[in-house]
Length: 227
Image 1 (cartoon, rainbow, N blue to C red):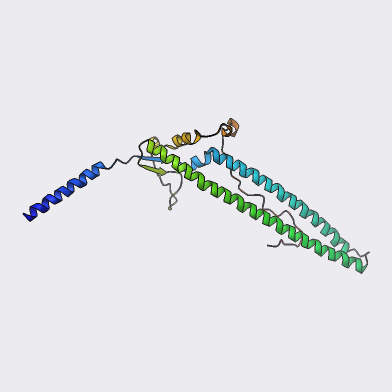
Image 2: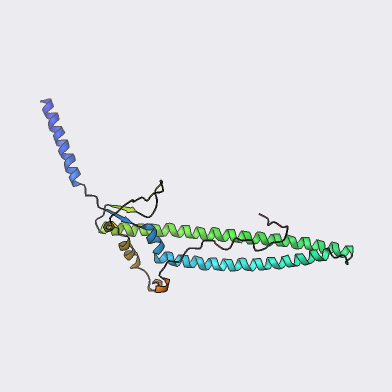
């Protein structure tokens, strides 16, 4: 009797598991290219254009500071030449040499000012880009999820990035399961008319790569900029 009861319980449990398994929805998988959606997003194009403009303004400021610094270099050279003029008195030479040293200090200060400005500008542009990227990817992810759910999807994978083994996360997917273009349409339906790209500006603007020129713009022979 006891074995019969145990057998009935086991059969009932198996039946319950079978029903539960049948009740689970079938997996319906979709893939999306998050990198493509990010790069071609009209907000990304706008942000990159804005950062490029800010980068250009920063470069203008660096050029202005370099011009001032090079003016100081010319003054330093003139004072140095004066200090070495054999026709001058010892007192005049000493005075010129003293002024040259002061001018050298001003040059070093200007060099440091330029380097600090470049570093601060680079950090600012990078931070702004990172903050924007995190926010927009979150926004794109929500839109992609909405589109996938609307299509009855139960699983959505990103096919754009490599795995830890440096291979694509999705090695193969039927194009019929790719909803990238559907998500792009969903994103662009809210795009302002002013943000609609012209045929000549269809390609996304590239983000600033250098964050202003880092090449030395103020140099004196034998002088190393202070770090």
